[in-house]
Length: 433
Image 1 (cartoon, rainbow, N blue to C red):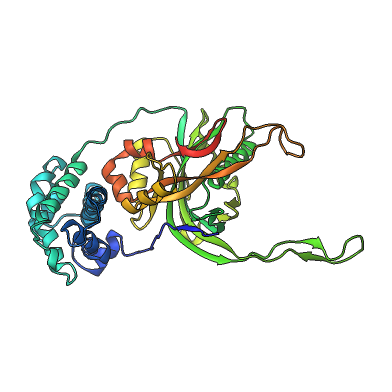
Image 2 (spheres, rainbow, N blue to C red):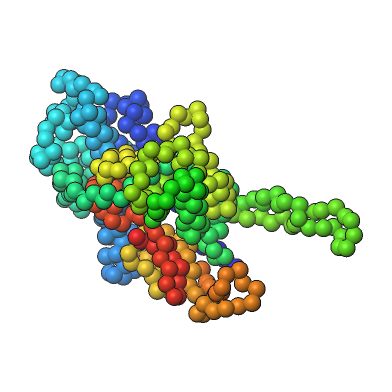
């Protein structure tokens, strides 16, 4: 059977940080975001060099490409945004003679005046394009000049927009797990899909975490791990066989040695993830950090999960009660990673699945649960009172960069990023909360 590969394609790049950028050069922008091979391909489509077969496909793809262009401009501007945040937190001092006028204005002026800097920043965009031999042909291109300026203006307006306040639920807390290391997780999430581990397996990890924590707590209050959001920092998919336990007698009905079952190559993945678990309880779980550390399950999607190395000195378990603090945590994650969030529009068949992925490369197929092939009924030999035959359910999820979370603010993240269990008479699905 042919297998559909849908890896996250995460390339770990430690240079995509403000500190690394400043050590390499005195530039205040990430020029690589606007000059690499991928974005040059976007430029070619936008100016019409590589047109598609139909107008409908062209409209769909252009919409995706404009979003991709906006994301790249935001990444180009990100070092300057982070520099301003450090200045606001008084971690650096400003020397008027050290910074160009546009950079100094961005660092020191109020956010409501960001739009006034559009012209100056737009010149730096085209300067970045000019100084690279691959992208120089797109600098001041007549079909890109207005588009680049319009998307830059959109980004500056988003940075200026006030953060919407969310109502605080006293019984809702967020458990933030950082830099968890996963080894030999099953990448074959269904018989015909290889990539992100099955969402039901991830939900099983969350549920087991809840059971272990409640057992250690020994309290009567209800504690529910109701939903989760997941961020992938690293992914490595490979094939290999795991040495099984010796579990089969060499000869039957006699005293004989025990042998291992047949070795079989399987797809596995090693991951580094951050996870946010929404906890509904009246208990302040911040008082039980040591129990939360002890209750972490050892298994994840058929593999092993470990806390970060002790030498890293990371506080890998944090309890967050404030939405603003949560947003501050998620917006600063490295931009080579990906949030995996539920997608609202789902295909009805395999052909639509293929067309959706072609039109938007941020979409990725995942195994999200099961569709029942019959109504649950009593069946001899079943482990539970009712049994049902089911088929794997494929869904689309969306890969989202931290820079998009930063521009979108906390409300869209809180509304769209969390996965939860949904069970009815015909399906068991892990879907949008």
